[in-house]
Structures are given as C-alpha cells and as structure tokens.
Length: 240
Image (cartoon, rainbow, N blue to C red):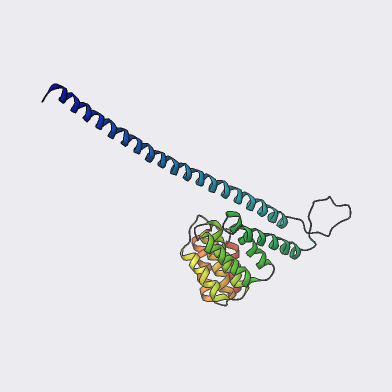
C-alpha cells in the first residue's frame, strides 16, 4: 500500500473517530441537559410544596391562636367603658361554645396540619365540657386516627376517649380503652400512675369494686411518691 493511501486511511479513521466522539458528546450534552432540567423541576416543585406547606401551617397556627385566646378570655359580664378589643364571656358555657366554633373552623379548613389536629383535640375537650360526651369521643377518635398513637395529641386523645366514654356512662368502653392505655403505657406522654388512677376511677364509677381496688392498690404500691396517692386512698375508702 502506498504511503499516500495509508495517510488517507488514517485521516479517514481519525475523522470518523472525531465525528463519533462529537456525536457522543452532543448526545451526552442532551442527556445531561435533560437530567439538569428534571432536577431543576424537582427542586422547584419541592420548594413550591415546602413554601405552600409552610404558609398553610402558619395560617392554621394563627387561627388556632385566636381560638386559644377565646379559651383564655375572662368570664364576666360586659362592662360599660371596657377596653375595646378585650373579649369577655358571661359564662363558662358561652366561652366554651365560642371556642368550639373557632376550633371547628380551624380543623375544617386545615384538617391535616399540626394546628388542625390540635384544634380537633381542643374541640373534643370543649364538647365534653358542654355535656356532649358522645360527640367528644368521636372527635377524640378522629385525632387518634389522624395523629397516630405515638403523637402527643393522639395519645392524649386516647385518654380523652376514656373520660368521654365514662361521662356518657359507657363504662365498658371506658374501661377497655383505659386498660389498653395501661397495657401500653410509656413515660413519654402520660405516666403510668396517671393511667392507673384513670382506670381506677372508671372501674369505681362502673361499680366494679374488686377491679378498682386492685388497680388503686397498684398506684399506692408502685408509685409511693405519685401525685395521685391521696386520690387513690380516698377512692379506696369510698369502695369499702
């Protein structure tokens, strides 16, 4: 093969190699650009969701603060010359009804937010105060369903179900719920002695004296420094 032909073949091979490399580079650029575009879209979407979630939670918290302010408002007759903007309520019931309406507004508008869950819990407490234990139990259960049993409000709502059920004289339901809490007691939210005294209360209210005595004896024996010792002793005395 002549030298000129060999040079021409080498030039063709080099040209082909360079063309292939350029094509691959362009293809890689397109793929890399596509990846960057996808990443950018994900970041924008994530940032937008975070901003939306933050705004939503903030609005819910503001509404919750307004509801809590009602609960903390003084109970007294409106007076002539009272400072403008200071809310007062003539009775505890009137204040509870106003708070319930506001809490309901919060969890209806923002059901899945932390503030919405807190509002639902407080609405249940207001219902119990207003003598509506069945409705209170329903709201408490909704808190448990939404927050879970590891959440503070979820755990406290389980206790609320016990109290609302006892208030409605559904003692078997109350005892069952209280016993479940005792069996799964942890110190992170509700101490075990608080759960035991609650179980003892509902057992005593249900007329189950033997079971109540056994439970109250546990409070005294296992928690000698408990804040519930005196109550446990008084309940025991009432059972004899």
